[in-house]
Length: 252
Image (cartoon, rainbow, N blue to C red; front, top):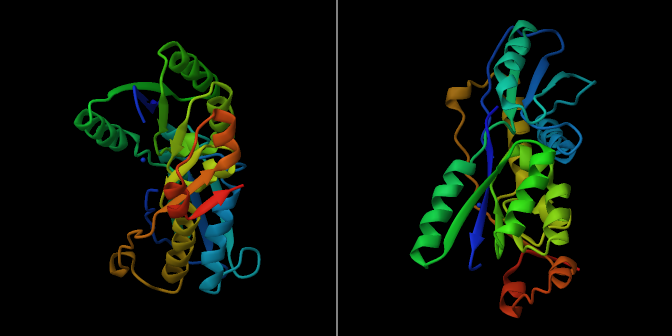
């Protein structure tokens, strides 16, 4: 199983686009929804996907059906799950939430930390109990701050991560707003729900006959800064007024 990484900062202060595959069309087209995450925590993103699909005229159970395959954090299962959908002869496979960008984020954070004289430590986790062990390591190493890498597994465990960070008084920053909504200190990154909505739109366009190779690549241009003030107070962190003013949302 592939390991996931936390990125921690010592002494001071990070969605993969899916692919689509065409297959034999049925009277009511069947969509294959493939994800490396867990269905429960990813329900808001699946809902955003369906909103995008609806914008192109497709509604599950009305004029299309959806076959779901969830790897539940075990990314090594994805090839087999994809093969199941191919055998099912679905019309489109929307592959979402299966690619970790933590390695890239780790390199970027390490480079930025080195430039300002900070030490970076990396701890890994690939299941819930390892997350708890990772926080014990952070406490033992007296980490001053935590950056959680962008990974579908971590996103599906966002409540656990936010709770443990507050319990151990470790200020943490995350890549999507859903962490801050779950009690995390702050998040900065692109909108995950908007990404899933765009995937739904692309799926609908392909069902209508568009060729995947002809569809433009859409790159996120808006980044959201979300700050959770109750968590900041619980951690004893004073957020500068200038930062609060620049935030896209402040959770009171």
